[in-house]
Image (cartoon, rainbow over all chains, first blue to last red):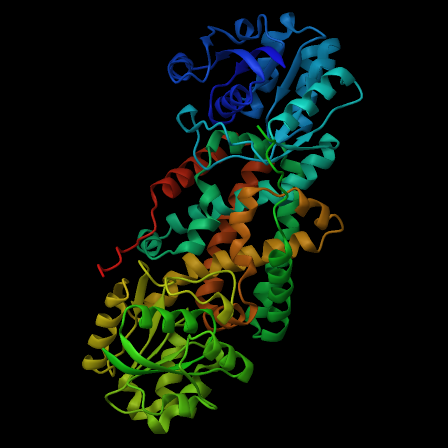
Length: 293
Length: 293
């Protein structure tokens, strides 16, 4: 399907993407670049990329597919640095968790070549980061959200849909703003709460002792607090308006629960817990069957 | 080790305890009682209890081990109802998640027979409830916290320590107050936050749509929000002082993070996320190797 992938950012997301694409037989050659030369070299030694490039621009040279897997705040500079080699036949994608800022960065950086850029957010990830955790199955069965704009070229959008489908993903399209509102509620806020909980416990004199007693509920609730701090700083900063709006709604609900607990209103508390428990029991993660090989 | 277990409350925790005790060959006979006769009958048909009793008192008759696995708010009434058959040779335990209120209830209900009661909190559980999810391995490898008081009989405490050890659990002792302070931070607050998040998302017009997009981070973060609402109403109500104190500390941390996000202070935000991510990465759940069979 593709001759050459230019991978910019050889971390968990980028490395796993290269492995997935190779495993599915969708690419002949992967040229990779990471800001740290030692990461690029590791990726090459691990066989995740075939050739290491000394710059983002050189990673793009000769590629018909370019994937940018860097923290959101580095998107604009990255796109600017490759602009001169972007062609209308090239499909360029990111894999970031916020979309409004990346779309704006792409417009600013690529100018009239922005049509080649298809903003993408695969709903996957892990609490560990780095090329050493790259895994060919990270994307299998997951949802991918594409947020094309009016300037996106249909041909590139169609290629992106087909490519993710061939990797075993379900593909949905929505606007960057609708994307950012939804993920503020179901992803960015949970991460903020998990980081805040760990921070709050750690800051207490007895925090260390408390943590030795924590069980499986705590383990799962806080798994995402081990996530990459740079990636999450960028997500929170670039989606701040929606994130803070969701945080406000959350705090209002929390305050209601606190007041029920404080006033001893067990019936009201039970009612809220019952509805939440039912809603969570009914919920199942949307997933997709992997393609047959 | 025991002739007869009197099990009061045939739910996930009680049923799993009976199965674990049988599997380890530590009991000859289990007599069970649940408030709902159909639950008692199901437990009998599933072989989790050998005999169904029509009352808590009759479940205790002839038992040398009694386990009370009911919501915390039902503890005092349950203990009162069995008081006349409590003997100094009997080991009575609960398995509840808060300990101060249970200890007070036991003093009030059992009077001078309170020495037979060893308050216990096994650090385990699941987001599903009911006898149909009972599982002989629910307790294996977990920690159990015992919170004896000055009136607890040493003989019963020693039996409790040996019994949990034989089930493959690590056993720790602490005061009821120290227990409640620790679990407010690492268990009760996370549950409150998870319930509040689901409630906050569900109350939004687009909440349903948002939920269809949620991925594995959300799945794990909110797993505990599916927990039994009655059990958790009681835990929150009976540990309200410690829970609200932890909630206040948490809200202060959250407010600091919000203000960094709002003011665009990415460096400060990154620093907090980095420390939290490190702390969570370092953390590992305390677990114990199961005994050799």
